[in-house]
Length: 530
Image (cartoon, rainbow, N blue to C red; front, side):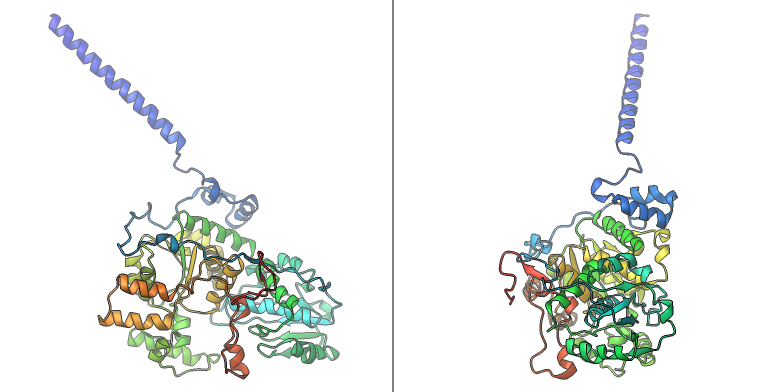
């Protein structure tokens, strides 16, 4: 009997112990869930400032406020980071991959000189029809600001190109902050939104301003037109102003227009900020401007790695575009001269040779890649952490920008300027604009591939003559030591070039605003740079 009692007591003890453990576990779990709720808000570095929250509500509506502020993980990306992968033995100098290049104390210096005056009395109105994609239009708009100052004109907010390859119906205010643009330039040029009604019937002069023209041309030939006209229309805006040999105040005005006045529209800025925050949640990242798109391949005539049918399709596009004057192009010669964009596979080999590990987050700043996912396989196999607008944002978030290539390009521009490393695969308008902006903001690391040299290496790898590894990596790294975006003076024309070829060979003003708009704070501001 006594034995039965002891057994009963033991059983009760075990039951009580289990109950106590269960209660303790439930208590701990409750505390854990309280501290880390499923939909916790972003940590402080990822919170949008209050003005951006107001813009957010206008874009998505207040019902989506919780998702905008609390969705830490991008909606269309796999959960959880990739497992950390070791560098190969020969990749030992990791800090150099992300470390900012020495900027030699260069800082923006865009303030006008003491001789600069308020805008003189306007002699008439300057209209401007921009041409090209986003970045070609940006440069053209900034040049029109400077030209308006030179010829004493009131600038009417320029019209964006709606007829080019991209067929985008966006207006100026859809892409840029119109009010900020007008107000920021108030001390330089009078800018208005529309031509006054009384000028609607005025005879206007439609004029194709000469490319890369200087002060004499605008103060003479163009300004003399005010005697007969009150309205002058610039039919094209790209490359209308010389890169060099302009007064300091005109050059500084171009920089104020480009980097201070010409901001993106609030809804674009807000979405760009959100995408940057989401991209940074994966760590330091590369923005890869992968210009392997149908329009640029058709324009350049580059067909390496494409099928015969794809090459024929690109040639047909080139032949049917009246603005592209060169029709017969030898694709092998183009590639050997370094005039073709890197393929996704070539970009992967290049980044790997530079030493970037396979768990590097990469933002693909591009439109639709020609050939689709099949041409991305080689890049994705080496760098699985590939991101894009479509992966970082939901369909609903991107819907306001859908079917507007200029606005989508603006989002790529923001993520590229803000990236830890920017690498373009083709030296087009986007690559040049982003490079210049990153130089202006402190010479952020921008890798410019030496495509002519790289093509020879890629071909040898393809032929089995060379193998990837330390020797090839050392060669690529050495070749690109001075192609990382460090400070240097803007390049002049190629020696011996004449006429228009001379201007074409100059480095564009908006690619490198040094020395005009960047000054070394620790030395004499007039010191030149080698």
